[in-house]
Length: 133
Image 1 (spheres, rainbow, N blue to C red):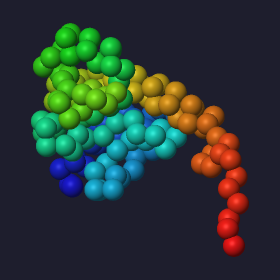
Image 2: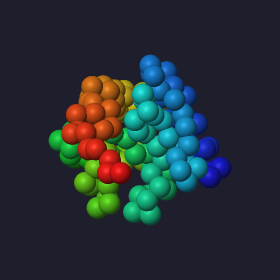
Image 3: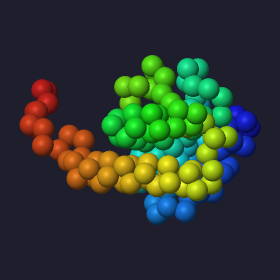
């Protein structure tokens, strides 16, 4: 896990400049950024991803354009393809590029977090079932 932490330091420094972002650890100990409790960015952990790869939120259409415009930086694997994320090779990102990438991910994450908060709490709106005695 130390390797993930070292690779994640620059991501963490930039990511924590955005409002509502916190650095936490996933269930497997890998570091991730969350905004209002929702995943924003993290080191890709699936075996299909290349080493030193960041996974961030992205819209499907924008992901395709990013990959087309900069295939040496951005990519997606079969495993990640079904999710609204893009994979980015950390060594290929400049600090400015990392900031811009995280800014997009932050906006998408905040929009998702906002929608989640407007939904009824678990169980709300469901018909009440009486317990049998």
